[in-house]
Image 1 (cartoon, rainbow, N blue to C red):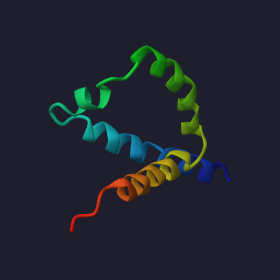
Image 2: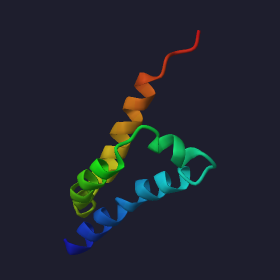
Image 3: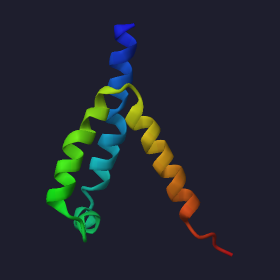
Length: 77
């Protein structure tokens, strides 16, 4: 059972890695941080980073965010 927890928690690093890679494109990080209260968000994310220890939590959240993003896109006609 401990092994399953480790695998689930380890899989949380897949979406984190994908986001980090996406932010390496020139200008991507600046665009992501535009208009953000950095000090406030640092405090918020200091607590939210504990979700890494919940197996598959970040995987589920990343899928949910991607589905929401696709649903918010206007359809081309």
